[in-house]
Length: 178
Image (cartoon, rainbow, N blue to C red; front, side, top):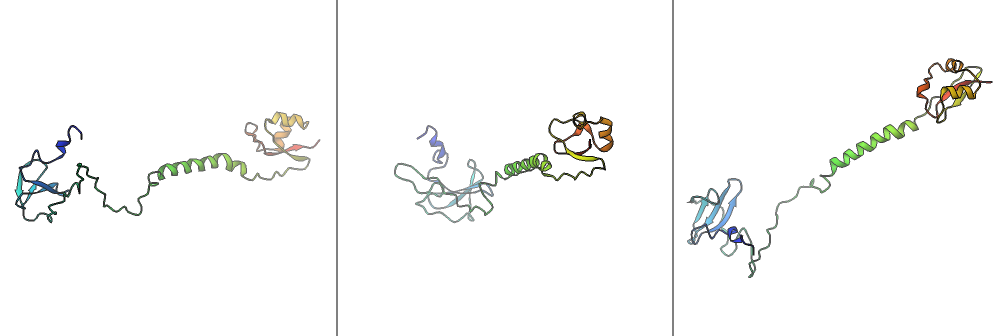
């Protein structure tokens, strides 16, 4: 046994023959039984006790209410928790906020990375004397005009909404026919 286990017992501070038999957590009061069977109430573990008549039902004399049955070597099993867990109490309940954050981040990544690539491109309707062309990675307006043998001004006139600094691979633009 440990060095301070004697302080876990009531023997060193209670009058001889007194035994602790209960504790009321709501009022914070301890109940004790004397040798003659009378019940006493104490406001705290330490302090003055007074005799009461409306104490809880007395416990059997042979069992200690707080520790339960003990073996000959002094071992006493821990008391079992008699509280009933409610149906919503789950070990995954604590993980729910974390899982929710992960799902939101994944949806945001999907929206910003995957969804724009899957969106349908608008069909390119080119005026007479021009044909549609698809922009590939690394293309610039200058390179496209040079590849199709026209001036940059002509390319910009055929595509009035074209912004050369925002070309995206897969976009369709109109180029003059040779």
